[in-house]
Structures are given as C-alpha cells and as structure tokens.
Length: 137
Image (cartoon, rainbow, N blue to C red; front, side, top):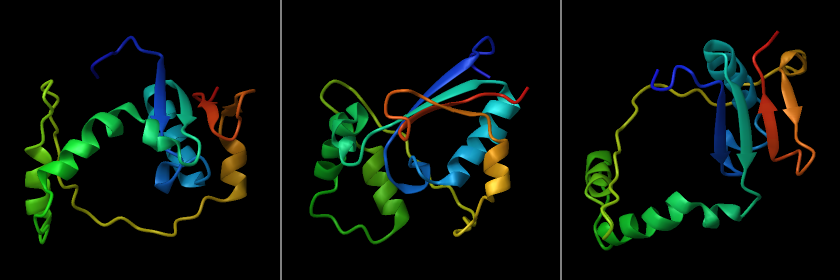
C-alpha cells in the first residue's frame, strides 16, 4: 500500500455505467473490497448526469487521444491501445493503458438484504450523488 497511514479515500466518479450512483453492485463492492478490506472511509462524489464534460482528466486528455487516432481504423484492441499509449499533451501529460482480460459477468444482482447491511451515509447535499461508505463496526 502506498499510503499505509491513510484512513480516508475520495472517489470522484461519473454518473453512468457500472460505477454510477445507482448500481448496487458498485456500492456493495466498495464496502467489501475497499472499505472493509483496507479499513478506509470511502467518500464518493458522482458527477451529475451530463457533468463528465467538466472532468479535468477527460477535459485535458480525451481530445488529445481522439486527435492521435483521428482517421485511423481501430480494427484491433492492440491498435487502439497503441494509439492511447502514444498520446501525450504539450505539457507532458501521458497515458498508461492496458487490456484487462477476463470474463466480466453482467446482470449481477445485489439483494435488498445485502444493501441493508452496507454502512452507507448519504450526504446532506445531493445525497443521491454524494455518500460515504464506512468500515463495518
């Protein structure tokens, strides 16, 4: 662990996909695999729908990636990864990319009983987008 003395983790996430503010599996896995396993208090702040356009990483990097592969056929994953890895900005920001191979099952469900066991604290401001997950007692 890089910061063994850390007790808190802040995650800034977008509003869609598997790490959105609604998927139950995201919260259940944060509880068991991050907060529970590492003993961290995890605060999650999701961008509102459509708000990812203000994401500083996306704003600074995705346009350069698009320019880097503009007009090139992305016929294989290795070709696509090569263009992503070769992307740099004029200020020297670079990209690291790798393919995660494996089977990713879809349609997993988290039961209501499991959700009730999570240690989730919704924030007063925009509680659907902002919450904290605490290690269990």
